Length: 252
Image 1 (cartoon, rainbow, N blue to C red):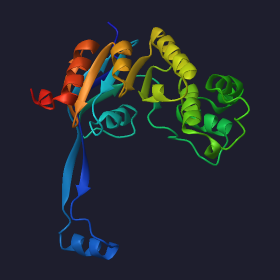
Image 2: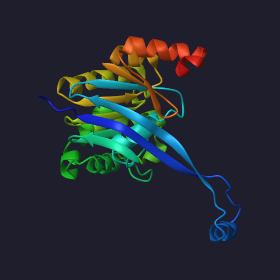
Image 3: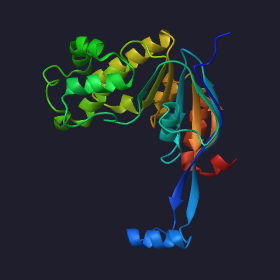
Image 4: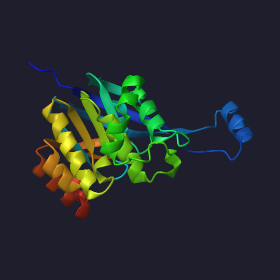
Protein backbone atom coordinates (compact mmCIF):
# COMPACT_ATOMS: atom_id res chain seq x y z
CA UNK A 1 0.00 0.00 0.00
CA UNK A 2 1.38 3.42 -1.00
CA UNK A 3 1.65 5.87 1.88
CA UNK A 4 0.11 9.34 1.47
CA UNK A 5 2.62 12.09 0.69
CA UNK A 6 0.77 14.34 3.16
CA UNK A 7 -1.22 13.35 6.23
CA UNK A 8 -2.93 15.99 8.36
CA UNK A 9 -5.01 15.06 11.39
CA UNK A 10 -6.91 17.52 13.63
CA UNK A 11 -4.51 20.35 12.79
CA UNK A 12 -4.94 23.55 14.78
CA UNK A 13 -2.81 26.68 15.00
CA UNK A 14 -3.52 29.89 16.90
CA UNK A 15 -1.89 33.32 16.79
CA UNK A 16 -1.64 35.46 19.92
CA UNK A 17 -3.07 38.94 19.46
CA UNK A 18 -2.34 41.77 21.90
CA UNK A 19 -5.66 43.50 22.60
CA UNK A 20 -4.51 46.43 24.77
CA UNK A 21 -1.47 47.38 22.73
CA UNK A 22 0.45 50.21 24.47
CA UNK A 23 1.72 53.25 22.62
CA UNK A 24 5.33 53.05 23.82
CA UNK A 25 7.85 50.44 24.93
CA UNK A 26 7.79 51.96 28.43
CA UNK A 27 4.02 51.47 28.66
CA UNK A 28 4.44 47.89 27.46
CA UNK A 29 7.01 47.20 30.20
CA UNK A 30 4.81 48.79 32.87
CA UNK A 31 1.75 46.86 31.73
CA UNK A 32 3.75 43.64 31.68
CA UNK A 33 4.96 44.22 35.24
CA UNK A 34 1.40 44.96 36.33
CA UNK A 35 0.18 41.97 34.30
CA UNK A 36 -2.15 44.23 32.37
CA UNK A 37 -1.14 42.99 28.93
CA UNK A 38 -4.06 41.01 27.51
CA UNK A 39 -3.73 38.50 24.71
CA UNK A 40 -6.40 36.83 22.67
CA UNK A 41 -6.04 33.66 20.63
CA UNK A 42 -6.99 33.84 16.98
CA UNK A 43 -7.46 30.36 15.57
CA UNK A 44 -6.03 30.49 12.06
CA UNK A 45 -6.65 26.74 11.68
CA UNK A 46 -8.86 24.48 13.76
CA UNK A 47 -9.74 20.83 13.26
CA UNK A 48 -8.30 20.42 9.76
CA UNK A 49 -7.80 16.83 8.55
CA UNK A 50 -6.97 15.48 5.09
CA UNK A 51 -4.42 13.44 3.16
CA UNK A 52 -2.89 13.83 -0.30
CA UNK A 53 -1.65 10.82 -2.24
CA UNK A 54 1.36 10.84 -4.59
CA UNK A 55 0.18 12.06 -7.98
CA UNK A 56 -2.89 13.86 -6.55
CA UNK A 57 -3.76 17.56 -6.64
CA UNK A 58 -5.71 18.99 -3.70
CA UNK A 59 -7.13 22.46 -4.36
CA UNK A 60 -7.79 24.63 -1.30
CA UNK A 61 -10.44 27.36 -1.56
CA UNK A 62 -12.05 29.84 0.78
CA UNK A 63 -12.35 33.58 1.43
CA UNK A 64 -9.48 35.82 2.50
CA UNK A 65 -8.55 35.04 6.09
CA UNK A 66 -9.75 31.45 5.83
CA UNK A 67 -6.34 30.01 6.78
CA UNK A 68 -5.28 28.81 3.32
CA UNK A 69 -1.82 30.37 3.29
CA UNK A 70 -1.26 29.44 6.93
CA UNK A 71 -2.00 25.83 5.99
CA UNK A 72 0.66 25.95 3.27
CA UNK A 73 3.19 27.38 5.74
CA UNK A 74 2.53 24.51 8.13
CA UNK A 75 2.94 21.97 5.31
CA UNK A 76 6.17 23.74 4.28
CA UNK A 77 7.43 23.38 7.87
CA UNK A 78 7.65 27.15 8.26
CA UNK A 79 5.09 27.14 11.10
CA UNK A 80 4.75 24.35 13.67
CA UNK A 81 1.26 23.01 14.34
CA UNK A 82 -0.23 24.05 17.65
CA UNK A 83 -2.22 20.82 17.87
CA UNK A 84 -2.67 17.69 15.82
CA UNK A 85 -0.39 15.73 13.54
CA UNK A 86 1.18 16.77 10.24
CA UNK A 87 3.30 14.34 8.21
CA UNK A 88 4.87 15.46 4.93
CA UNK A 89 7.00 12.80 3.28
CA UNK A 90 9.93 13.53 0.99
CA UNK A 91 11.32 16.64 -0.67
CA UNK A 92 9.04 19.69 -0.48
CA UNK A 93 9.05 22.61 -2.93
CA UNK A 94 6.93 25.54 -1.71
CA UNK A 95 5.85 28.54 -3.78
CA UNK A 96 4.04 30.31 -0.97
CA UNK A 97 4.45 33.99 -1.73
CA UNK A 98 6.15 36.02 -4.43
CA UNK A 99 9.77 36.74 -3.58
CA UNK A 100 9.88 34.59 -0.44
CA UNK A 101 13.51 33.59 0.04
CA UNK A 102 14.71 36.14 -2.54
CA UNK A 103 17.12 39.03 -1.94
CA UNK A 104 16.26 42.09 -4.02
CA UNK A 105 19.91 43.17 -4.24
CA UNK A 106 21.00 39.87 -5.83
CA UNK A 107 20.67 39.04 -9.51
CA UNK A 108 18.15 36.61 -10.92
CA UNK A 109 20.78 33.88 -11.22
CA UNK A 110 22.10 34.48 -7.71
CA UNK A 111 18.57 34.31 -6.35
CA UNK A 112 17.86 31.14 -8.32
CA UNK A 113 20.90 29.50 -6.73
CA UNK A 114 20.01 30.81 -3.25
CA UNK A 115 16.34 29.80 -3.48
CA UNK A 116 17.18 26.42 -4.98
CA UNK A 117 19.74 25.77 -2.23
CA UNK A 118 17.08 26.54 0.38
CA UNK A 119 14.93 23.90 -1.33
CA UNK A 120 17.75 21.37 -0.96
CA UNK A 121 19.42 21.50 -4.39
CA UNK A 122 23.18 21.53 -4.91
CA UNK A 123 24.28 25.12 -5.76
CA UNK A 124 26.70 23.81 -8.39
CA UNK A 125 23.87 21.86 -10.03
CA UNK A 126 21.74 25.00 -10.02
CA UNK A 127 24.54 27.00 -11.64
CA UNK A 128 24.73 24.44 -14.44
CA UNK A 129 20.97 24.73 -14.97
CA UNK A 130 20.97 28.56 -15.01
CA UNK A 131 20.28 28.79 -18.75
CA UNK A 132 17.42 26.27 -18.51
CA UNK A 133 15.88 28.21 -15.60
CA UNK A 134 16.13 31.47 -17.55
CA UNK A 135 14.60 29.92 -20.66
CA UNK A 136 11.70 28.36 -18.79
CA UNK A 137 10.96 31.59 -16.90
CA UNK A 138 11.32 33.71 -20.04
CA UNK A 139 14.13 35.71 -18.40
CA UNK A 140 16.93 35.33 -20.95
CA UNK A 141 18.96 38.53 -20.76
CA UNK A 142 17.68 39.37 -17.27
CA UNK A 143 19.44 36.80 -15.08
CA UNK A 144 22.34 39.19 -14.37
CA UNK A 145 19.96 41.98 -13.32
CA UNK A 146 19.11 42.56 -9.61
CA UNK A 147 15.55 41.40 -9.02
CA UNK A 148 14.59 44.76 -7.53
CA UNK A 149 14.11 45.67 -11.20
CA UNK A 150 11.81 42.67 -11.82
CA UNK A 151 8.05 42.86 -12.04
CA UNK A 152 5.97 40.62 -9.78
CA UNK A 153 5.29 38.39 -12.78
CA UNK A 154 9.02 37.98 -13.47
CA UNK A 155 9.65 37.07 -9.81
CA UNK A 156 6.80 34.57 -9.84
CA UNK A 157 8.09 32.95 -13.03
CA UNK A 158 11.59 32.66 -11.58
CA UNK A 159 10.28 31.11 -8.35
CA UNK A 160 8.16 28.61 -10.26
CA UNK A 161 11.03 27.64 -12.57
CA UNK A 162 13.35 26.92 -9.63
CA UNK A 163 10.74 25.19 -7.43
CA UNK A 164 9.75 22.77 -10.18
CA UNK A 165 13.29 21.71 -11.12
CA UNK A 166 13.63 17.97 -10.86
CA UNK A 167 10.69 16.06 -9.39
CA UNK A 168 9.79 17.15 -5.85
CA UNK A 169 7.72 14.75 -3.75
CA UNK A 170 5.42 17.57 -2.64
CA UNK A 171 4.70 20.87 -4.40
CA UNK A 172 2.91 23.65 -2.49
CA UNK A 173 1.52 26.47 -4.64
CA UNK A 174 -0.16 29.71 -3.56
CA UNK A 175 -1.87 31.29 -6.59
CA UNK A 176 1.20 31.07 -8.85
CA UNK A 177 -1.04 30.09 -11.78
CA UNK A 178 -2.33 33.67 -11.72
CA UNK A 179 1.19 34.96 -12.41
CA UNK A 180 2.46 35.85 -15.86
CA UNK A 181 0.87 35.88 -19.27
CA UNK A 182 -1.38 33.24 -20.78
CA UNK A 183 1.52 31.43 -22.44
CA UNK A 184 3.40 31.02 -19.14
CA UNK A 185 0.25 29.95 -17.28
CA UNK A 186 -0.30 27.28 -19.91
CA UNK A 187 3.27 26.04 -19.58
CA UNK A 188 3.01 26.12 -15.78
CA UNK A 189 -0.14 24.01 -15.87
CA UNK A 190 1.56 21.56 -18.23
CA UNK A 191 4.57 21.34 -15.93
CA UNK A 192 2.32 20.64 -12.93
CA UNK A 193 0.60 17.89 -14.91
CA UNK A 194 4.01 16.44 -15.74
CA UNK A 195 5.02 16.45 -12.06
CA UNK A 196 1.74 14.86 -11.00
CA UNK A 197 2.29 12.17 -13.63
CA UNK A 198 5.68 11.53 -12.03
CA UNK A 199 4.13 11.09 -8.59
CA UNK A 200 4.35 14.58 -7.09
CA UNK A 201 1.60 15.45 -4.61
CA UNK A 202 0.35 19.01 -5.16
CA UNK A 203 -1.52 21.34 -2.81
CA UNK A 204 -2.81 24.38 -4.71
CA UNK A 205 -4.35 27.39 -2.96
CA UNK A 206 -6.51 29.31 -5.39
CA UNK A 207 -9.28 31.90 -5.65
CA UNK A 208 -10.01 30.68 -9.18
CA UNK A 209 -13.01 28.40 -8.97
CA UNK A 210 -12.56 27.10 -12.50
CA UNK A 211 -8.95 26.24 -11.67
CA UNK A 212 -10.10 24.32 -8.59
CA UNK A 213 -12.89 22.63 -10.54
CA UNK A 214 -10.81 21.62 -13.55
CA UNK A 215 -7.44 20.83 -11.96
CA UNK A 216 -8.29 19.48 -8.53
CA UNK A 217 -8.73 15.77 -7.83
CA UNK A 218 -10.37 16.93 -4.61
CA UNK A 219 -11.17 20.34 -3.13
CA UNK A 220 -10.85 21.47 0.50
CA UNK A 221 -13.00 24.47 1.51
CA UNK A 222 -11.81 26.43 4.56
CA UNK A 223 -13.66 29.20 6.34
CA UNK A 224 -12.25 31.02 9.40
CA UNK A 225 -9.71 28.25 9.77
CA UNK A 226 -12.20 25.41 9.90
CA UNK A 227 -12.92 22.85 7.18
CA UNK A 228 -16.37 23.28 5.66
CA UNK A 229 -16.17 20.59 2.98
CA UNK A 230 -13.69 18.18 1.43
CA UNK A 231 -14.52 16.15 -1.63
CA UNK A 232 -15.30 16.02 -5.33
CA UNK A 233 -14.47 19.35 -7.05
CA UNK A 234 -17.84 20.15 -8.63
CA UNK A 235 -19.73 19.48 -5.41
CA UNK A 236 -17.42 21.54 -3.16
CA UNK A 237 -16.95 24.41 -5.62
CA UNK A 238 -20.70 24.71 -6.26
CA UNK A 239 -21.36 24.81 -2.51
CA UNK A 240 -18.66 27.44 -1.98
CA UNK A 241 -19.96 29.63 -4.80
CA UNK A 242 -23.48 29.46 -3.32
CA UNK A 243 -22.07 30.53 0.06
CA UNK A 244 -20.67 33.74 -1.44
CA UNK A 245 -24.18 34.96 -2.21
CA UNK A 246 -25.78 33.22 0.80
CA UNK A 247 -23.43 33.20 3.86
CA UNK A 248 -25.94 31.02 5.73
CA UNK A 249 -24.78 28.13 3.53
CA UNK A 250 -21.57 27.90 5.60
CA UNK A 251 -23.54 27.40 8.80
CA UNK A 252 -25.73 24.63 7.38
